[in-house]
Length: 489
Image (cartoon, rainbow, N blue to C red; front, side):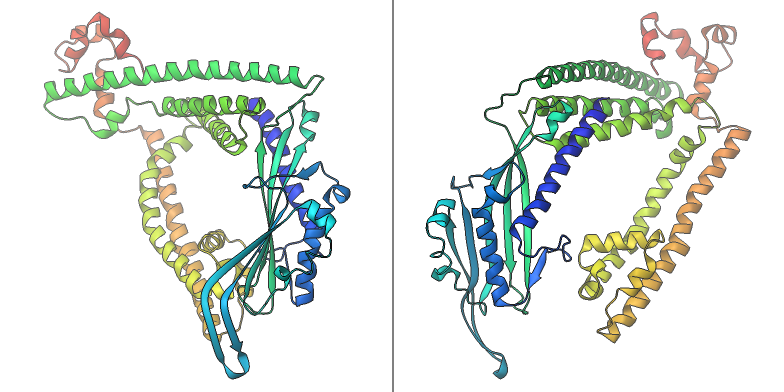
């Protein structure tokens, strides 16, 4: 219930940010088509279009309150000023004659900025257009950046009976001319930050509903805290019991207990519950602070609550382990995990080699290889048989040598990872599964710890067979005060 409530609230927050970003693009970008071109919004190819796009954004900012459908107002920037900040970057000195292949350039970059406030726009509508600042020398211009701050209120949260959030939007429009290729790319970036509303007066059932949710979150914290204490106590007692068992084995048999038997004292499910409880407690505290609008870190809270819920559902598998048929999955994962990790370490080296090779060679010619993270995602998709033909078809045939290399690269990667590495990966898990199935039919190998427990399962049996197994001395000499330590797990 707690996670669902917070998830619905977080969806409203994300939707509000995305819808505002889309609205800003339509408001401030002249001729925006609604779909971004690759990683930028759109582009212009003439000086006239560049000037019109710059002046259009400034003019729209001036008339924002008259044209916007949202609850927006002007906000202050880092210097506590309201208005537009327009900056341009250009080379300090540059003369170029492409016809003669000559170039004279000073690579130092200069930055010049001005502030345009809404009142100045209304008084001198034409003066700022004709100012020398906006006479751009495109042959040495690198970029023009327009930045401004807006404020808004998300009122849709009140429909969910929650207090509204106040937002501060830091918007930046960048006209990128670094390539000097005759194409200026226009980027729009909006960074939305949730701020505490200074004067919030809301009447109705919203305040009462907030108090009920805070009470419910407090109940969740109490339950998780009790679970955390009990599981931690069990782990501590198990560690004390493990220490006694190691000392006993060393004294009686003059040898150390194997690592597998030592780990039998640590209940992994209890560790999972402890981690889940910690995340739930911290996430619940953050959620309570968000509800009363003291903090606004939705992302951290959602990660904590979401991960804790994942661990809770994984922990449910523990109860299926009491049935032999359903226990196969857990036992197979435990048996195959070490071999799978070693295998992945070796296969990862080959994977990294293909990743760097594809980025260096195919990056300039293929959209899926322009960055290391996109290369890794593309190769992982190919391993799983996704989007193969599109990856082959999108390679640009501008260089015959690169085109031939791309074919050799893709064919070798797909053949190696799908037909060999992936098959071996599945074979490791299948082998572990077959081993577990045989153990379930013929019995699992008995370890030293299991043999010890088998011989010492009852004090009466040890008393009847005092000479049967030397380890029974442990059960006979155990103090009555230590009973709680012997059966904690």
